[in-house]
Length: 201
Image (cartoon, rainbow, N blue to C red; front, side, top):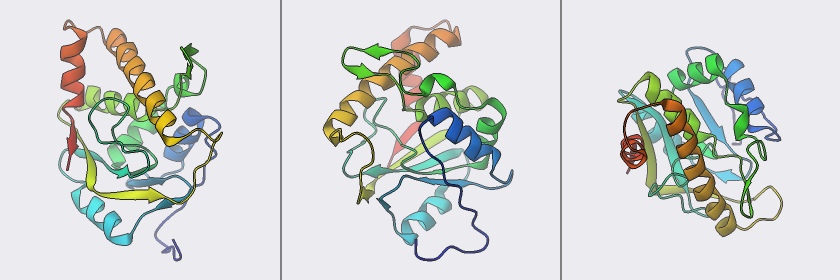
């Protein structure tokens, strides 16, 4: 952004620890404010943000964009909305402030699955926790007008490899939170109900 209005507060975070950075973000946000999360290098237009804000109402708790290079199309857990580019409603920010983001989303905290280090994908526990508070909450993923990345930070892992890892980790998180929920339904039914809260537009 070339211009930042005085009413907008910018909070910078180093994602060496996803849980610490996002909990800190929530703690430094005004209680009545929504949050726009953007990774370094995201190219997003003013009209995209305006559209997102206009739709962040009713039961919509997050309005996220597809990131063209990552091709997150909402088809399966791990391909939903990302904090790479998302508008988060103040009620979810409040939840993050009160509960914190679980530390097990930090890279390596839960070990590995094959060649993949478990970590990231903090959007999934954030979404599930929000649904536990508000079962009819919705999470919009806009694939009709994607954002793009002019830079990719990290270890040089390709977008294809990153997406493969996100799907593996996303499935692992779903199993973990299903077991912790103690709900008396089978896993696939539970997962389907959770994932139906993601609305692809």
